[in-house]
Image (cartoon, rainbow, N blue to C red):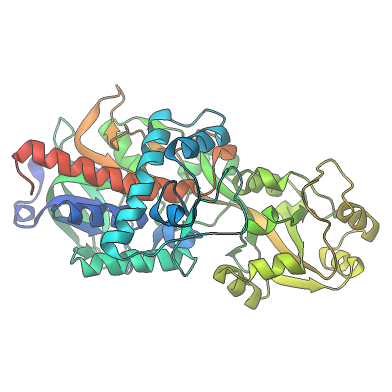
Length: 468
């Protein structure tokens, strides 16, 4: 790719050839958000095309754990788990301390269950509810995963479903241009091919399901300065295109201080270590062998705590029962195979691995210090340790949207036919790192894609009087 900048072009100058290549709905981005929107549009009888910058649809979704929180799904009901959108919304709001957008909290909490059920019933995605532990901030077991329990597995199944539905998926197509008139009506897109050529596609509506801005160092310095020096562990497609287009169109931005960090990024392997280990009694210690935060508060805010430690590193410490749990996650198995897990048969050996004072570490393991964990059993030898740092995974702020995922201008009015969800839009984590409830990223992607599809279908029916 030549790296052309995201641009807004005037509608009257759009190449005439683009009119020969037309689709009712153009979806920018082939991650979980874009593919969910495409599958639901297919169910609603609306033709669409997905434009994906990479050779295969992966994006931030493939780098995630692949776990999606949802209440009142068929799988939950089959397991006898009592949950509701209202309870889920309360958990989201509590984690964000009331600073998440109420209209989106309610909309996403109501939509995510039907979205997962539709993907299962109509497109064959099989969900299972993770058992044995609760992620921080969730009051019931509601974390759903495909059998692979990975983001790669989730994306593979969504892509296979899209292929089975004959949904056009144009890969190696990095959208660089939105063509819009003076009212903000989007009439088409221009996308760059690997050889640098531009192709165009006209449309009746556009869904931005593309990215956040975590991979754009200049935007991070400007909009998210507290993470300006953090390692970015997200997808390179998070280049801020949606923010750039929004600014050029006069869209309103919101919750730019919100993001998902993670305090458990294994180094030097570059692998995510599941926070389930912390929730089951694992601890984080710094280079001095001391705990420095309450791990049960959440892995997102843990990123800031870890980065504040000497050298910006910490060690995840756990024992054999927790190791057995961890080996149920394929990502952990891969990290262990890569050498991320150090096995120690005693406190002395563990202190040697960490490079800390044995007595200080022994005191920490005995529960001494300012962060007691009364509900957790004491860790016992043999121990395991993983060296980690804090990382920025994806931003949670972006284009302001209403409950129908319509992009809003600076006066709060919706653009005629421009929708956004997932990383392109504000999420439900508020404007700070501690507002991120586990799974909020994929919640925004899948629930947002579901809502955006219904909104686009309704808009097209209103415009044409018929279903496209």
